[in-house]
Length: 116
Image (cartoon, rainbow, N blue to C red; front, top):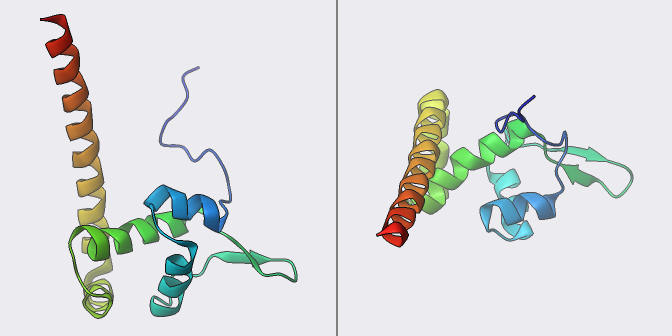
């Protein structure tokens, strides 16, 4: 049976793992949690260790798209998400897929260049 690449491999991710996924500092993620109230990863134990689920990562992907890729300030990103979160989520998803397609096409081009 083939591995489903879209199925999450883990139930919970640490803040370090999530920061590495996005190329951010852990402190940036903590700050975004204060700025975007819907972003609340599960915390466990007396040390309040953050445990990000797939839904948290999807929310972060949308915030990352607005702030880092499209260049919005945090206040503007909050307005966009409050006004039309579903639309912003869809745009982030489309952009992520397009980047993946671009990367695949570039890899194919490199292979074709190698063959010639």
